[in-house]
Image (cartoon, rainbow, N blue to C red):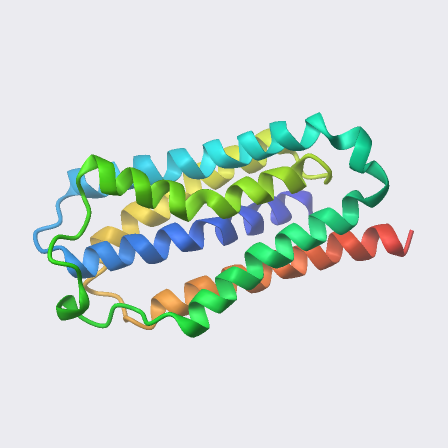
Length: 191
């Protein structure tokens, strides 16, 4: 059961990166395998780095927040999940190449910015790792690998996938994170 939660957390955290990768695939003509590999390495690397940093920050204050750790985990996951749901509902997905910026970002600097931006939620999830019961290393590694795989695949298949897919990916990821946060909260309140 715990490894199912690890998988669900990793999949949920990968959804932002997947949506951005699909958008790049839609917008950028002539996508090659090397582009997909670059996006996968950037997105997967940052999705693994950020929860590790969040975990380290969380354990440094765990003795202080111990009595309310379940509330903090719930609130952080609910905020991240809620933000993902909000993005899925409110933001306009890229519907065609005409909606794209003049040059879809595959250069290092814009890709670095996107990798950081899509992994900020993983930083908050990492803090909740420090107060939860999920195996930290497995969660971090799974998050990085799943994000790398999905974002690499997303960029390659971007033109072939339904444009509505972006919204469903973000929405499902948001709901899963909120439910995991609720589960943590209920486990502590009902014990």
